[in-house]
Length: 162
Image 1 (cartoon, rainbow, N blue to C red):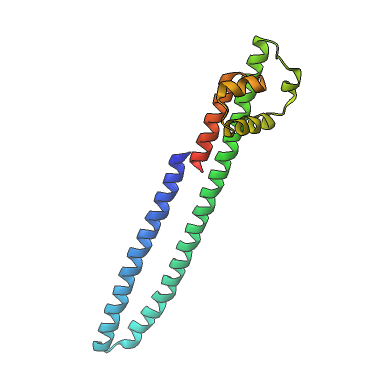
Image 2: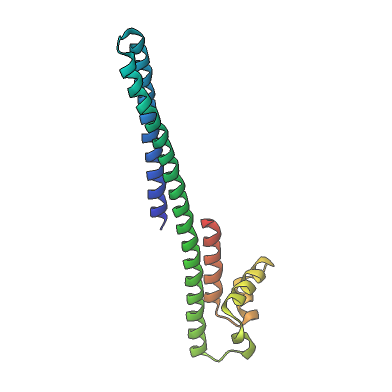
């Protein structure tokens, strides 16, 4: 997923560089044509060509700007989808860990299994921010320590991605 973001950024940068080079070359061409117009007898023909080129330049600039905007929107959409996918992966891993824990032993507190997955994630993160270790959080919430570590690690990775 990160490489797709890099590809998009690369193509945006590549497009901008090409546009700048083309604009510089066209402006030089226009300047040279103006110098020649002063010397040349056929001013009308050159002026018509320049008048045809200038709208093309503005249109090319408009297209490049629209392309860049679309690429930014797509990049934002990809990042949003990645965040949602990571949240789903966290939920699935939590459910798998909980299922394994239930099959290994009966939970100490029957109310602890009635929590919703997102509520448990929030509880884990809140307890971590209060300074509790993963072992202490596991005892308090009656969850496996591996599940606590998984939630904390994934939360750190999500924060790093943002």
